[in-house]
Amino acid sequence: MTIKSWQLDRRAFLKGTGVSLGLPWLECMAESESKDSSVQPKRFCAMYFGFGVSLPDEKGEQAKWRWFPNGEGKEFQWNESLKPLELHRDRITILGGLSHPHGRTMGAHDTADTFLTGALMNEKSLSNTVSLDQVIAKANGNQTRFSSLVMSTDGGVGEPTRSSTLSYDDKGRPIPALNQPRRIFDRFFGAGDADSLAERRRLKSQSAMLDRVLEDASSLRLRLGNQDREKFDEYLSSVRQIEERVENSQRWLEIPRRELRDEELKMLDLDSDENAPMTFIRTMYDLLYLAFRTDSMRVATYQITNMADASSKAGKFPQLEGFKDSLHTLAHAWDKPEGAENLGRWDRLMTEQFTQFLERMATAPDANGSLLDNTLVLYGSSNSNTHNNNNYPLILAGGQNLGLKHGRFLKFGDHVPLSNLFVTALDSMGVHREAFADSTGELSEIRT
Image (cartoon, rainbow, N blue to C red):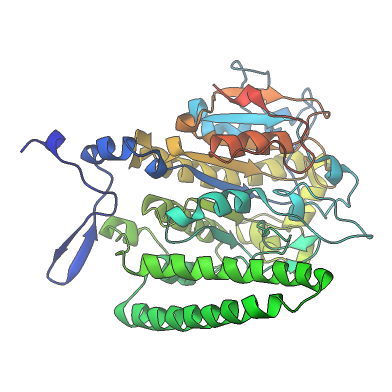
């Protein structure tokens, strides 16, 4: 039997001596997968950092620490802050000039919450709207064991305008972020027999309870007036969403988890925390990569720093890495003597961590290419420099199999809202929407 005369399913695994070993993606899987577009992987992830970047004058003494490149289009030239990305030049696009119009009217530290939503949050209204990642997760989340992975340095949800999560559900409610590497590992890769049995019992109990709720609801609805019936229908819609999640979880309990290879387990430092920033950030990136490689989910967000100033765990990151100042002070001093270089060196450290993540994704085989080829990656901030909510520093990476074209520095006018990028991203992910937030169209420049 030749290798082309049979195919392996992506969930194939080997068993022996009580150990299951997940198979990496193999070429013999490609033919069977290509026949069914529903298993063609399309992934999305977004990373956010707060307080902006170093942006000295292009002709000044510290110009080489300017985050944005020199030039434009394919002929752009790196400055020091982004130079580690040279290895992936053909896999990335730097975007300049984009921002959320609502964000320009908001407080200087208030825009992290709306990075993926484009909503308006001010003293009159602190309510948010659905985030880009959760629109994708709702459309495609049932294809994997988990619909999405939400991570941040601080964890939880924070508070309005100082959020510690990038992700918001369809009601605009913040989705708590995970920030402990070991807990993330246990949730995605550590399902033991006892855990599986407990989970099965819990889901069976929840399913029975929901059946009773929906059965009682049918008779109760008939006795309600029109106004109450509308409110009750909204409640039932929420119950049915829970029911769908329970059913999906039950289905995935019967499917073995994809195991990690020994070398992948060794690269993780699950005891890392915010007291060793670069190790901590690298471990979070590694967990994100492994979750993608095992196809545990296809949507993720990672908020590396938020805008909570001194109360954020990330505030002390630069000092722990040998810098004199906290992150907020470092960002504020970008226009002081040597300030652009100091912040630029921090920007470069962050770029190096991001580059390592892209390298792992680019060298991991996947259907029709690499993980990065099938993943749209957005990296950036909602400040250009601190307190400036215009001209977000943004990098778009990967997604060549999703129709993206790279190797350029694209500049846009402030009449182009960032949400136009989101409309195009949704379309690339197979989620077709005419508009998102305050979009005015698509961002066709990033497409092939």
